[in-house]
Every structure is written in structure tokens, then in C-alpha cells.
Image (cartoon, rainbow, N blue to C red; front, side, top):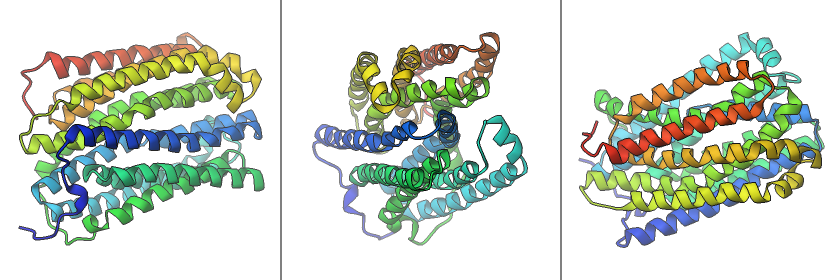
Length: 427
């Protein structure tokens, strides 16, 4: 048994609800501040060609399709479990292997991209290859960032989770402005800014969690870990696919002029989900800890209620002030096209936000029966969306109506597993 000293960050607050609201409130503030700084990059659409801005949106969504959410939740779960059961050395082994595996995966993907680079440039309507190579570098740090942020989340170091978000957003904006304004790199310059910002979001948690991954490693039970990890990878992977993949489908069917309002509407609408996700992020490790210690908690109901209120208000707020916001961040000529999509986009995010909370609760409690159904739904969405685009060409709102319908189905499925199947057994 390890005799290593437990960090102060693991101390449990004697007033759990007060701690929850304080921590989730801080992460919301950080999400708003970091999101505003990250969103500031989009002001550069006023000084670059519309086609370049659309390219930036496509390249950004390529990184968004990485399994960052599943990776973060896996490491949040494993660190929370390891710290609650004093298995720090096994956690150290899992961290090191994760870094190695993701690097090898990236190396293989880089080789594939190199071979098919001309097809990718043509298919994504890229101006040149520079943005593609910057995006490739961004993919690697984007794979590592959620792993180490997940360690912060699992040990409930929410203070530095928040500062990581803020500082990463600030450096991202500064870097993008420099490379676009001083070097006229367009979408590639904006991606360089993203690379700089995400790199910082890796370095901070790497430093903060050094006591976890630098400790002496110890072998762990692969079978037991995979039983815990695979449902999280597939479950949160399905959520992330529903959250990010629409832009990747849309760019194949629409030109740069059509994609610009689509990207602006998507950026604004996803802010609704990023606003409410901190509550689920704080809830997740606390529920794992409660399950391990057989403690009762009513956090889930509070988070569902808070998410519903905030997401609905956020969507309505975008619908009301959208024309002013779009005119502020883009051009007056983009208002009509963006506002035609914004209500559909923001509306589709509300059921997804609620489903995300329920998925966090179900998987934190090891109620994995929902995962196969979620994966089947995501796969059906992946086949349905191209079919709709082929049968309704030139209509980007069809993408969002399809997304909204499938998000409602996801919400219904998760609600049934959370409340309807009360007799469902763990694992």
C-alpha cells in the first residue's frame, strides 16, 4: 500500500452543495472569459477573405472531431477512482501509456494525411497546405490536453481548470492576431493561434499533476480498466460526434459564402453548451466519489434544473440579440444568413446540453446500458445527415433540423435510462 501524502486538493468540503456551486460558478466564469477570448479570434473574419474564414471553421471542426471529451472523462474517472482508492501508482502507469498511445495514433494519422494531402486540400476547399500542417500539429496537443485536464478534473482541482481555460484563450487570441495581422497568414494564422493556446492548456495541467505521472508506476488490471474505460469512450464519443460533426458534413455540400454564416451561427450556438457544461464537469468526479464511498447526493437533480434554465435562457438570448452580436463580430451582410440558421442551431443545443448532464450521471454511476443505444443513434445520425443533404441541396437549415431531431432523441433516451429504468443494474 502506498504511503504517499495526499494533496490538499483532494480534501472534501463539509458543505458539498456550497462547494459545488462555488466550484461550478468559478468554472462558468472561466468558461465565459475563456470563451470570449477564444471567440475574439472570429473578429479576424473582418480582415480576411470569406473563403479563408470558412476554411478556418472547417479546420477547427477537424480538431473538434477528436475524441477529446471521451479522453477527458476517462482520465477524470480514472484519477477520481485512483485517488479515492489509493491507486496512484497504477494511475501513473495509465497516464504514461496514454501519452504514448495517443502519440503513436497521431503518427499513423499524420502518415495518412501526408499520403492523401492533395485530396484533403481539394475536398475541404483549402487555399494551400500550410493550414493543414498546422492543424496536424494542433491535433497532437489536442489529444494530450484533455488527458491532463481530466486529471485536474478527477482530483477536483477546479481552480486551475478555470485558469487553464482563461489563459489558453488569451494566448490563442494574441497568437492569431499576430500571425494574421503581421504575417497575413489568413486561416493558417488563426490555426497557429489555436495551436499556441492549446499548447498552454497542456503545459499548465502537466505541471499541476506532475505528482501523479512522475510517481513510480505500477502494473494494473487491464481487463478491469477496459471495463470502466470503454463505455466512457463510446458514450462520450457519441455525445461529441453529435456536438461537432455537422460542420464537417456541411462543408462538403456548401461553398465558402454559405459556410461563413453557418460557422458564425455554430460558434454562437455552441457557446450555450459551453456555458452549462461546467456544472456537469464538477458533478462527474463528485458522483464517482459518492459511489465509491456509498454516499447519497442530490446533485444530479440540481444540475439538470440549472442546465435547463441556463440553456433555454441562453438560446432565447441568442435569438433576441443575435442580429446585434452578428453585426458586431462579422459584417452587416452576414446578419440575414446567420439569423436564418441561429434559432435552429441554438435550439438544437438545448436538448444536447440536458443529455450531456444525464450521460455524465449515468456513466459516473457505471450505468453503461445506455451506451450501445447512444452509439447506434450517433451512427444513424451519421448516415441520415448526408442523405438529407443529398435530397435537400443548398439548404443548410436541413442540417440543423436533422441535428435538433436527433438531439431530442438522445435526450429522450438518456432521460429514460436515468429515470425510467430505475432497476437498471451497474456495468
